[in-house]
Length: 463
RNA sequence: GCUCCGAUAGUGUAGUCCGGCCAAUCAUAUUGCCCUCUCGAGGCAAUGACCGGGGUUCGAAUCCCCGUCGGAGCACCA
Image 1: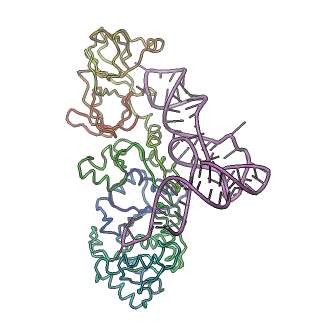
Image 2: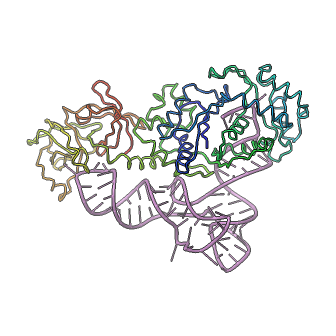
Image 3: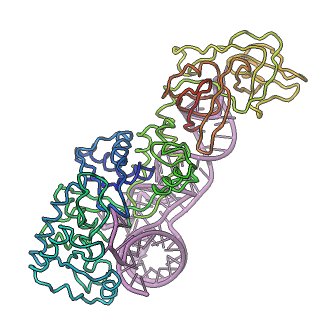
């Protein structure tokens, strides 16, 4: 099988579907898959030189290593050779009709005057194309199909055209005569021994078009599956490489790994495992209708993956400071993980004031349980420590809340899918290393990204 | 306009090829209860779907026709 990306930027979430499915099939059935960059349009789908590696990097994040990697722009001579063979078989002709003129003839089911050229002339003109003797739009090579085919989309389609803009890759920047996707991909799929092709419904006519070429060469067409588009909920940003790219250029997004961007680099930075994405993608199946992927499906799998091994911490967002009275202990020691006491406890100095999330601040006269510390009761101007007997929670239904010391907590910027949130975390958070995962209790999971001076920057994963 | 394709709960999916065991599977979601020093995890329960209409048949999610809705192609893009 093959994954044939257009290298125009790092992958968004939807791109994960192809490698997820073919990679999973490969592993399950001892198969083979390659990545083949279909980079045959240096102009309107101009490749981004950084994208080749960015895509392979995304693939690695998803947990797959391709068995081989190809670039169509390395293989022009191969395509030329097959075109020459096709001309010998009277299966292709050079055509200098304008696009509009040919389109009219085609829609009427009429051949253009170039269709009947003899092979020598066609060869001569095609070699001229390869040599760059024509300019963009002057000459194309068409595959001779059935000019009266009932589906106009299949009639004598273009196999090669001239492009004046040099290819960005140094190895390919001398070429001016480029194959169209249907020709290039059709030839490559056979030569690379692809047995199964999965592609989008937008390419549903491709197999029918390429079948004409396969018939000329007497090749057997691979099995082909078309699937619909994937929409992902939870994002305001449109899932399109060019849109994301524009937003980055305009400064709306900080980069491909901005938490608000629906990209794989973003999910990675948020601490979501590639495996969770692959799982969700495989679960989508290969239906031809469009599907909506719920991010909650990815989150649910990811939570299962990380919950057990992720230590707990406190983070209070937008905290309200409250004075603490009544002689509480000097230090609180909640466990690192409630299901794994053997991992030990955190050491949180208490001090004489704490921060609570505004929604957790108790009304005057009511009590709350400060997790890992004990029970406090709200008075007119402070929280009065009333003891550490957990029975008030178990038997009297006192609410349990998280908290941080007002003085010794550390600032945290939590970057989320909808924007940044600031808060303060227990002091230990400042010591965490980059890439470590935490669960801020009652807030959600996050990945520690870096420390920026005093401030710790974390990326919100999910709840 | 011409040519293709599709439609099962909020979402995804199984079942459709070869009609009955489907008053429809599983996951996720939502809600409630239990448990828990988290609104996490775990346990239990509830909610919720075969696009519509005809036809064939003893019997239709499944086969046929019409309709509706949705998607795609008709490029010198991929």
